[in-house]
Length: 455
Image (tube, rainbow, N blue to C red):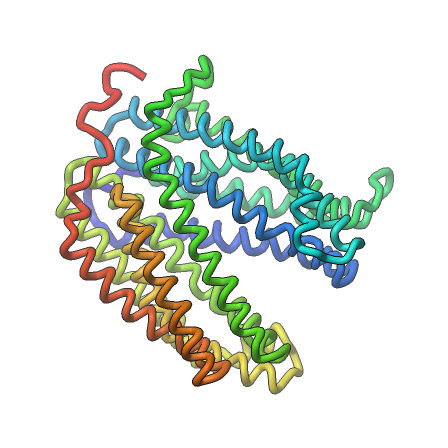
């Protein structure tokens, strides 16, 4: 059920919305880990094949998630304005735009996957499996996009629980299908790496169908009439205006990850192992901020749509404070339990554990600042200032790249970790200045009474 976040208390509704979002993010991690676990039983080559296809899929997903994010922003504003027709319009046009683009990209990717994989120059055995994996994943892109749109739209309406329950079902189904398709069972042949992709395709078809049903059934605060397929290209321009900067912003952060891994590789295998352990732990500890940033953005969007600018500002401040407090607690957890957490991933590797803990501790000093930064960046995006969010994020990443190169050169491996708290604090000061002085709350995403008379 959708929730109106324009009245009443702020803190408790934000926490209630954020909890399922944290679970959803965790489920996504578990989904990928399940694939990695079963493919790992086949040997390093199988894992390498899946890893080769991941950057390509992530790049395509960023483009589609930008559209879904734009639809969520519009839906939240219409929801706040109590404009039911606007909500339905936003949901339908977002679904049509994302479905059309995913279909084009899916068909294109299906046919050129071998050519894409060949660009990586991997050994023939790995390339063949990677090509098969990527080809099948592209075949499921359309269905996966249908659910992503439904998930974002429902989140924009304040319903974070329903899509999370669907995600939970998909993780459980994938957990069953992975060993069946990868290793074979009865009449099902052992498909190896391709089996993981087939398992994903099956879950995507099911979740895609459920996602469309959630949008057309009228049971979750939105009712989409699929027919006629009336593409509104003027509305598509609005989605592009909000979605393209978001897609570019997501891609910019992937660029940082590539640079960070490249710099860490200067210091050898042990450093890469310690870094990998640290990143796994910190990514899990950062999940509360991810949920809070999305919940805060939804609440801000609804309040701006309702014309309640002062309450929108208070929501942004409260969400940022909660993110800071939660991640400060996570930093304390690193101090208290970091060694044990690192030991879970590399048991018995004393030197790697010690190195991972120190790297993790230095990196964790940035968590509270990054939580606030993520929340305020999402506020910028959802308030209709997606270009500002892109500029702020790009400036942050450019500063990170410059500082990590300097710190790594002069301070070595742990200089990479120190980059995060230093840059995060500087970026937060800049972002806070923008938050106070830019007048972001004055941007109009939807007009009063828009689509109130007709679909």
